[in-house]
Length: 241
Image 1 (tube, one colour):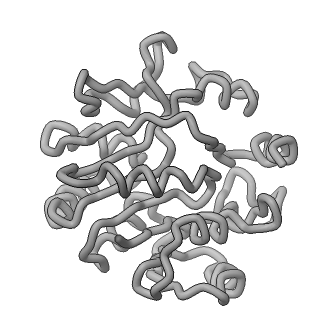
Image 2 (cartoon, rainbow, N blue to C red):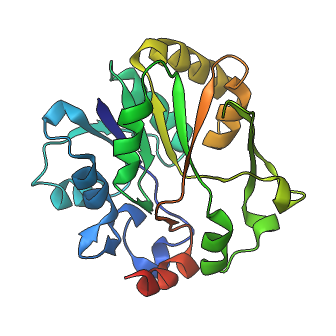
């Protein structure tokens, strides 16, 4: 199993107010990156992979106690997370857990993925307490959240569209994805093709575009999760400690 963290962006919506990459924000005396790496319980250098770009030297300095393989996105000013994902996936050849670097979540997510990953192409953890989280973050669900639905076998049927009725949304995508080694070459090809037509796009849009080609299993969870998207989220983070 490998861990791939996406941490190349500048965090434009918040950087001027906090003067640091979002991934270096601290929660319980650890940066978000340090927490995710520690919770993964992966020890070898090749196990931990981070796509870096903006302020990469600060990230490397902060993580010097860890064995980390850095993948550089030198086009971070003109590309989005999907391109960083593409760069990262090309370097790996194993089962992979991908994670955003501006989120906080329970380490039980890693344990549960490991328990259920057999014979699954893609797994995305789904938070079932998402409405409470959005209330805590003081967000408008209709403005800020996206659709997410799955069938009776928990296979994704829709993600990433505008919400019309929150009652029809079954959970919140958490910014974490498991990809099996077996399906990795296909996903890389699909991602490369998608990027040719969509220079800048959201990861959820990509998942929505491939849901008919690959079975994306939705793993329900009610464990702790929080995202730092803007300065309001950053201020609200203090109340979580």
